[in-house]
Length: 308
Image (cartoon, rainbow, N blue to C red; front, side):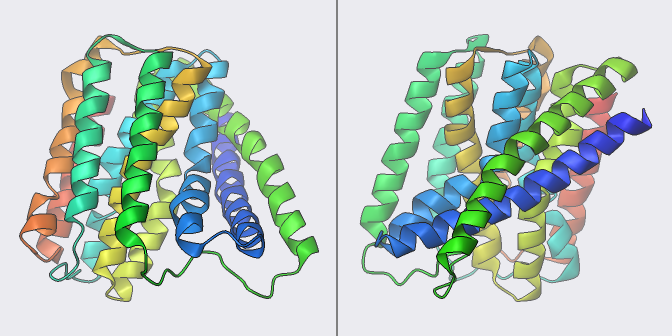
């Protein structure tokens, strides 16, 4: 199995690097074309940073492993709350008072409930994808209207970046993403078959953790710099895009059946993790080291339960 684990590791590295270069190239091209910074931040950056998860989910469906796609999204959302907020809190306390993320959190909670409702039908199909993408477009429009006039610092923006470098960044991203996704999906499905577990479980654990690594790195740096709004906003935004954008596009490629075991526990763990954000979002509670221990411990317990 060494080769399969190597394929997963190499696939993850390629995905992370390709996603980063794609964002750099696309962001600077969009700004050079005169697209407003706020629009670039809400669309190009948001979709670009979710490109690895999107390519993995689409590739999984094309390869006949839709459970891996579903597990990736739900597992990533759970990991984003419990792990991506838990580990940085062990490093430094994140102060949330004064940072208003209530509106975005309510969007995420509504998206979670909508997604669970579709899962309860037994199979997520193309028209569910249309609804999810429509909801995403509505959220982006509302966010744009509410944020007009604010100064936005766009991630990946380099005003002096030359045209040929933009082209290289775009090419590396567009070529690297499908290669990384193919390696990750192929390696993951082989591991699942070898150990007798479902693709859904591999998606919930191995793939979900891997595709959450960029968010973890960003949040660790935000915690060190005492930017709690960045850390919390990063998690909320990522989860919202996973549910509405990634699954919205993925199910247009093919239907995604929902495993009964998935309905019994994993969806509700994701919802429970989402609700754990209430004290930070609405009550201004600091994400202390105690919370970090609790969140990280819950994630380890969930992993043990998922793999049992």
